[in-house]
Length: 439
Image (cartoon, rainbow, N blue to C red; front, side, top):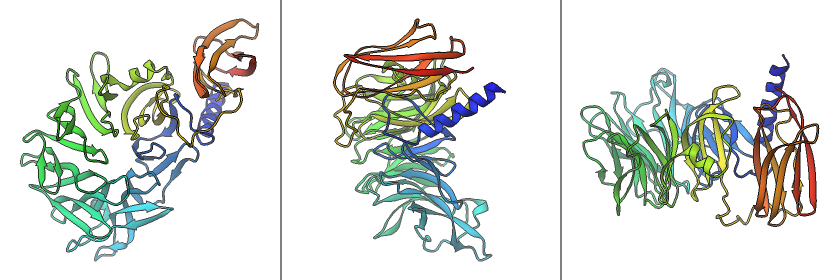
């Protein structure tokens, strides 16, 4: 019973910590159960498949019950997807699920496709918005027709819907450049599989004859990413198509990319890996995301596996995705902001004025806890763990670190339940916090 109470308490503390204070760096934040679909370009807003959005300060907020799908989000939390519109009624009085955008607790429908009658939501979405440009001016998605066909479209306030065409049973638009000139998605081949395509507005197939899909495009239209011919790819007009998962047995999908062309995705596996998230960069090429975090000293000990990365910020420092979380072995979403010292400090960042060692969270914990501390100047730091007898049992930090906020995790899996102390030394500063390990 004590273990159950401890687990509930730890889970509560984790959730509560994730909703207050300045954004942490270099720590994998648990966003809670269910998958995250996408992240805003600045990395501050996540959206999830069960109808929620999340920010670090506000936590998880659920949209209204009439939300059917939510698929993309801008920096100012303009969310697109589909919802049950009470004004979109069939001749029998049934409600349709239509494409729209959500802002400030209100859904706004994009309107009825001219000449296409509404149909009952129970059979499928009448229309659905899959993507929105970073500036919020253009929305893309697909329209379903009464004969079962569906077709990609782009929408804006001035022109309304513009259908993009389809060859056989259907096409879909997934994302759009900021100026609305390039739209990416897929068009169905005669034999059935999807084929990667972009419209500018002409229809362009990047790898004709091979099954695939373009998932995303950078705001300036330079890079497109997706999957084709059994591998994750990046495409540009200058460089053509690039195989990002060459030599990987299970090649997965490229989902999105940063402004400089770094690509993230998931579903890859080879050599002991099953279905894992990955990152591809110009400097390092392909890496499993868990290895990428480990190399930067970011602990993934609380996670059994990281499956997919579904978001990367424009500057390539913030990531979101989902994986298997060890405490309850359920699928949870995560968010991580990486600062390896090379990024230029944000003008809006928190200015640290004093040395500080915060209370660990959660506390009590089992077996992993997170410790945050602050340095007003670049200085040598020691962060050690002691048992009740005053014996040093773990060295967490022993190095020179730059000024700012720092976060580290301690995994106490090999230690017994009891009271421990975390001691910080930096120059003349010294501080101690009591840690309670409860197994």
